[in-house]
Image (cartoon, rainbow, N blue to C red):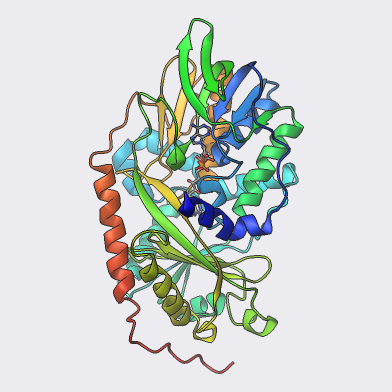
Length: 438
Ligand SMILES: Cc1cc2nc3c(=O)[nH]c(=O)nc-3n(C[C@H](O)[C@H](O)[C@H](O)COP(=O)(O)OP(=O)(O)OC[C@H]3O[C@@H](n4cnc5c(N)ncnc54)[C@H](O)[C@@H]3O)c2cc1C
């Protein structure tokens, strides 16, 4: 519990987005066309689409909108899924892969269009993202990614070491793969904006309303929420990594991976000329991945795999200080004003899952760390699919089950690996490299 409180208190996005939804707990019995469990990108996008289609829809959120991954996110609005397109083709076969990849290849444009259409204020920065080669060998991987992305219709640019330096302001990277159509957002403001947009179109959003039971019957689905009954013709469960408190016969199966973030105070105007001067959002090719970006106030936000609030939290915190100085020597010694963590729902093939869980009901999860575009697009498509009673809108066909062997054990393995790497790299005894004179 104390971890939960410190997590929320320290979360930069909560600090910067004070506007609370007018979304009270469910305090009566109710009847709807579509019930959505979970107020993240997926659930709120589903509610927005359903309301646009004229349906009576309710989102039931156990805590507040954006409590899960959607409010703890880095905010990188990237296209596609984690996997290389050719790997997706091997795993799904050519037809299903084409369906998924073509739906997601314009993900950032679709999300930015939705944000503009619904006038959501969420620090949109359409300044591109860069996937950075952390080692010389990784440059080949970036070239391969560029070639394969072009096959899905997405044109990315390879940056030389000098161009990478210009865009990021860091001398640490060997090359970069630049997506000029991608960008960054304030993720909590985005999900709250989705919820407000859905409300404006007539959707009901209930916060502090944990669903404790659900079952199907002759008259559709019945959810138990705070002692009240919510009856729905259709049901979408969008709880992803934050699924909790349910009497659920088939909870989502995934490997839980911690990701922690650290934000400085707003940097001075002088420093901002040398740190991410083009405002691109960045992440690297390392096995234990790191990310960095600026927010609108000019805070540098550094993130990486690892649990800041776990037994080895100190190691991750110390790593963040050294890593910041390694990437940007001019920031050595900067204190972090915010740090927080979130859980990523990773599946063994790194692909999201839609499960058909009975008549007129789906469960979706397993975005494996890329959920802004997929969550928005899956939520929108799932609402449509349920309301028109067809799988045609879905980017991925539903299956009946998904297993994830040794999920907890594999989660511990990732955490141990991240901790070991963070303990040793960048070497605790190394001095930060000297910054070049401007
Ligand atoms: C630290 C971190 C950084 C990330 N960075 C990025 C990034 O930069 N770019 C990107 O594309 N993706 C990123 N992701 C992935 C992305 O955030 C997730 O895939 C996405 O948020 C999933 O959205 P969702 O709506 O499916 O689930 P969530 O946002 O997790 O929402 C699920 C909701 O369900 C609610 N819930 C659970 N149980 C119940 C219940 N019994 N009753 C009612 N409600 C319930 C929870 O409270 C929660 O609010 C990141 C994830 C993490 C954790």
